[in-house]
Every structure is written in structure tokens, then in C-alpha cells.
Length: 207
Image (cartoon, rainbow, N blue to C red; front, side, top):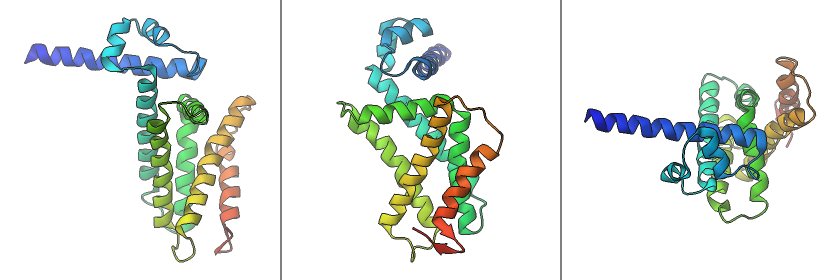
């Protein structure tokens, strides 16, 4: 039993090294240019070891995206639990996403690049698309629980969720592309306030 546990620990450590190495390489060189050989060389393992854990580069990309979505949704749930009025709940949901990606530029890059890859209709697109669908459906559910459903239809909630997700990754991506310096909380408060003012004004739905 002790030997089996050691083997399992080594296997788990190797898998984690492959995952962290792949994410770092994708963040610096892009998912298109990085090869399995690049990952195994940087992780100091053989190609055979890689394929014991992942059948392809697409598989490790999906693993990273899946784990990234899990971490993002967990952050949103954790930060939105204690919110009171509906506008505050929506604000916390939006800020949770901003803060998550602001603190994880590697995942921001991954989400952005995989989203671009899906536009090319790649063979592995369906499994990757499911992760984005899971993310948007979560936002729809959270918005539905936070807002007055008499004023917001399912279609309207979906539209708000899409705008919210696009604002978060779009704003942070452009800030990264332009090399703009961060200016503390105001960096995230400004787009958050603009979103909320566009959605709710004087207590009335504006969408």
C-alpha cells in the first residue's frame, strides 16, 4: 500500500507539473505555437509520459479550461454569497470575474485564445465550447436569482450575461494588449459602474 501511494503521488506530481508547465507556455507563447515537445521538454519528462496523462495537446488545453472555469465560478459563488440588494449582488458577480482574471493573466490569455480557436471550428471545438456554455449558464442563473424575474426574461438574462462576460475579458485583454498600468481599484470600479448604470437606473430596468 505504501509503495502504491508513493507511485500515485509521483504520478499526480508529474501530471501537475505538465499542467502548470503547459499553462505557463500557453500564456507566453500561445496555444497555437506550443507543441507537446515544448511542454515535455520544459517539464523535463518524456513524450510517452505526457501521453500517459493526456492523449493530445487539445486534451490538456481542455483540462486547463475546465479547471479555469471551475476556479472562476467558485470565486463568483464565494464573493456573491453575502450580497443584499439586487444591484449589489450583480456588482459583486461582475467584480468577482474582474478580480479573478485580473489576478490570473495566464487564464485570461487562455480563455481569450481558446475562444478565438473556437471561431475556426476546430475538431475539438464541441468539448471546449461546453466550458464557455457552462460559464454563461452560471451567469444567467446567478443573474436570475439576483434580479426581479418579472422584469427580466430568460432571453434578456442571457443577453446581460453575454455582455458581462464580454466586458470582463474584453476590458482586461485590451488593457493587457496596450500595456496600460494598473491604477488600483479604480481600474475595475469604472467599467463596473458603467455596466451597472447601463443596466439599472433609478431602480428601473434600462435594458
